[in-house]
Image 1 (cartoon, rainbow, N blue to C red):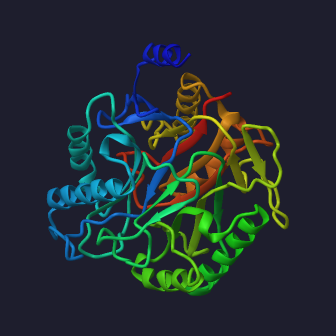
Image 2 (tube, rainbow, N blue to C red):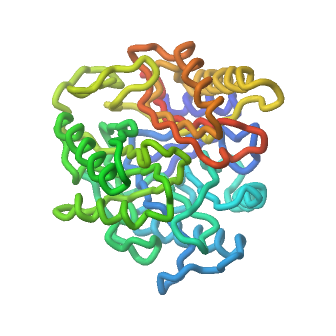
Length: 399
């Protein structure tokens, strides 16, 4: 059956390889030559890294002002982090890349195309904004298959690959159920908002029967990035009795709220076994939305990770979004999925017009009872010239 499955995807332009019982399939991108539009991976242990910076062995920024030197250093650090978690560069399924300058996009994409073997390139998302240190031009986080047989979330502590040495450099997500919690936001000044949002997320975890130790990765969308130390202080206080999981920080341009936080967690203690492949959950005190779900849980099956996808940028905003969702629908159809089996969306938008139009378009494609968990962040640049929106998505192969 597995052999037939591989043949089916090869006929669609996919390539796959099996190694030690781990199976990954790639769809080479039609938009960008350096990545895959989608990567499919079995229900196996996956390592999620923290945001990795171009730091040398002494923990100092390497190659100030030199994107080639920093790009190389980041990848050296990614390789070291993955090795410590039982993985390697060949097992990366998703890379999230953050750049300081729009002018660096083409160069970095070219370097990535040369770094990964054709037919085995990861899905890639790329955005532009301020980074955590003035000298840093590039940072990234990765998701990769791990050979470790984790039965619970396994944190790997830092070895000078990120600025904050209190934070785990990676976490291994065991095979089995996983939850994606949409971005939550409490208003207020940055410290108050961070603290309140973390407490609100903890309430959601408690409802799900989970604890802090089940968190695999946290992503914060913050403004301004220059006040990151305030956020880190609140994280340190919140996790004073537990390990701080891998953390990724993305600058957004929102003025209210100033921070939004999403998370991924292992879900070994599912309170209600629905028997469904995906559960769409609205915790108590929250209101269900037809365009995004507060929490989604994958109970079983293969995951699909997409790159940041773009629509046709030569027309209007409406046509750009329509072409983008059409592309996404075709991509998921070709990977054995559909819009009813999406679990997590990250929408990067470049302006208010695209943000508003996105809200108009989503109901046309999503089942209002089964929309994916989501975060929407307005950023300086979404990673492609002329584009006003990029969407990356996680789905499942329908079983």
